[in-house]
Length: 160
Image (cartoon, rainbow, N blue to C red; front, side, top):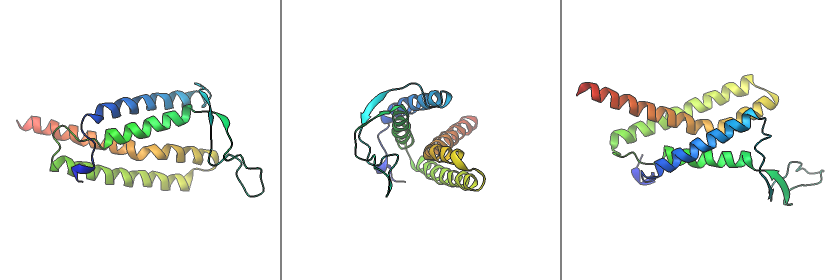
């Protein structure tokens, strides 16, 4: 993976901050059945909830909505991308190799989980898993990448 596609290292701290805030907000929403905190705001949906051929369309009409789940999602995604794709302090070919292998591994694991979900989870539980699946590839990548870096640095310190 070419380093030119990576963000500067200084964005890693911003990524951690946004990611952790989004994760905490998401957990709070999960524990409260998406009821609280309730930050109502007027929104302009491109596709409404009852969009269809023979139904009155709620698309493109201003309406009130709790934007807390959208905010948590945006924080998780932006923070996760900044965290995952910011350069390491000492970015070299070995770290690039670990980054690429971790991304491939995370993609495989993510789609294995998705396939198992398609086979064994149904109804609204399936929809919930699809929502979580938006974030799992980033989470799997971040966990594996930092674990392999930690393990590598630990083994190098034993050799010294």
